[in-house]
Image 1 (cartoon, rainbow, N blue to C red):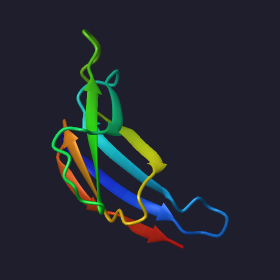
Image 2 (image 1 turned 180 degrees about the vertical axis):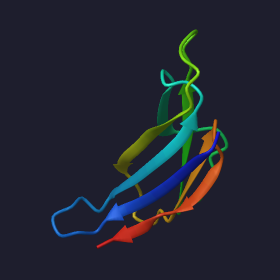
Image 3 (image 1 turned 90 degrees about the vertical axis):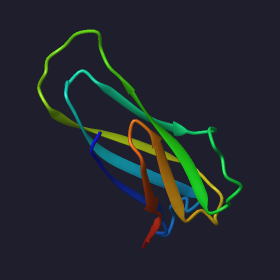
Image 4 (image 1 turned 45 degrees about the vertical axis):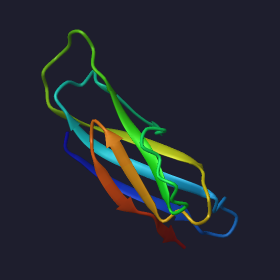
Length: 101
């Protein structure tokens, strides 16, 4: 599955800078497909700079065959040392967490 990813911490005044935000845009072959990102416990590495997420895809038993792009996101408090996010499951990627000021 082809996806583009972004990850950031909001360092703007008043924002909760403990939250890591991850956003993806994935091409799917059916507009009824549902995407979700969740913390992944498989293959956890004892690395305080890494958060592992799993991209899950729920495909309907029937539907159209129109290729569309779907957005998926995740945002939760994380260790302040987190600098990378690994996406596993239906898509494999590793992205750097950037600070947004």
